[in-house]
Image (tube, rainbow, N blue to C red):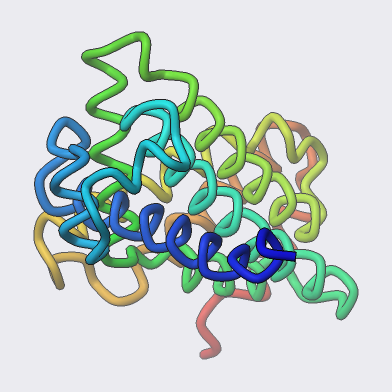
Length: 212
């Protein structure tokens, strides 16, 4: 009975730690995610991390996993709804362009985790899971748009989204408004042409061409 009464508050503290870990990583980098920094950000006692996680690294990995998987699920839901509504490839590209907009602090924390993993191989499991989740969402979008081999396209789409997001965060407003949409559409067209799907590529090009 006592365990049930305290469970909701324990879950709230755990969620606060995960949120704080993402915020600290965005502010000072993954290397700066410490027990003190996270608990101060969350407004919790210093010992709280040890109650829920074996180490601060375990907390950081779980925070990254939760964020990236929730984000992937959101984007997959967008792709599936567009597929059910028989959205055009151009409409799906526009929807994913909007979904790929950098979010603060989550996107910056993710990029910090990538850099951290590049320097510390023992930290790469969480980043691998993050990339897998992002590519799963990209494949869902490509599949909804009628891509002939969505899984093969997913890594390139994911890398493009991350690169554009990084540029936008490093220099806000430096990318023209339609850059992301145009880049996704151009890459999709390129994959169609490269795989021999000439007519769908031409049809998509005609649909998105300016009206004279």
